[in-house]
Image (cartoon, rainbow, N blue to C red; front, side, top):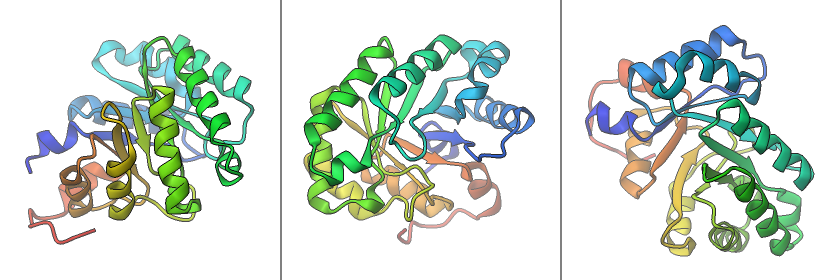
Length: 224
């Protein structure tokens, strides 16, 4: 798989708590220079990035991140603020406790509220698969579909585990036709990135995408 194709799938990500503007600026420039799908950055820096890069950069930010237990009104406000600052895409974390309690109607309501607040921008819903049973993952696929979100996303990268091939296969069986998939969390190698793309993921959340292709020779996919 050529780099141009791969990079067009990558949300080039920097969400470390100690990130400063100089670090975020570097990631944004890398995303522009390599024609990546987006730069995924903390909300604090969205306005600065939009002012510097304008329409040259697709800007993604995170809402309710990384734990997801903010109230619905707070998530809606965060999303609206991010859009006003210039965000093109929103990655929100669900309330995982609601999912574990089986309150999937409330999860759907929350996703729908955030989607309505962002004026047609892309919404990716992080379900944090490492904390879920397969039945809960399947139910959340229905929540994401029914709420009209654009993507289901595996992980924040801050949980106990990241994306797995098995979870992507499960998503494929249960999401609606209009919902796309984003794999994220622990994706650091060329083989892993290409493996998830080959599985059908439209986006890959990774902070190591450039490093993977600079430091590794071209090889056949061997699993991930």
